[in-house]
Length: 125
Image 1 (cartoon, one colour):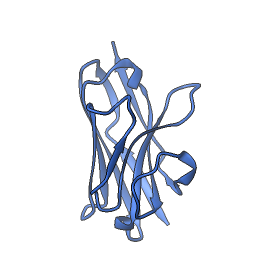
Image 2: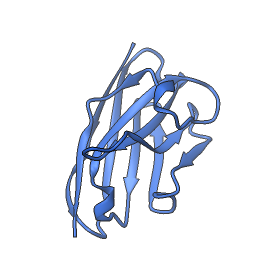
Image 3: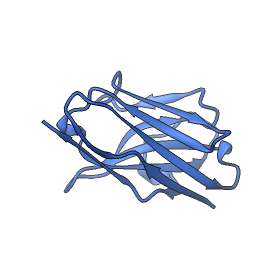
Image 4: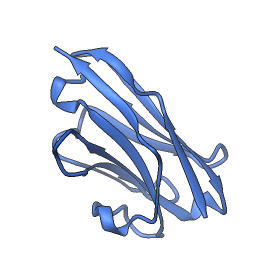
């Protein structure tokens, strides 16, 4: 079992930055790939960014590439999502998710086994 807790969300003006954290507890978090997803009201949950178990491989949605950066510190059992140049369309609840997977990070919601409760990010124009 892995428990995930997101933090760092909030209200920010367009062009601003936020850093989300995903703190994990449980067994051998370093064996898990982690993804960040987001869900706006009335929309499906979409992939944002993913990172492999070692941090050596990352993948981003086209909409955030060049603005967001995912990283992890396995010694702290934490994954981060640095979000820069935020825009109103980035407004959503952001979730981190983990799966026991040693390959490149995957983008499908259904492949992830563990989810956090989400953190709200609101970007005002």
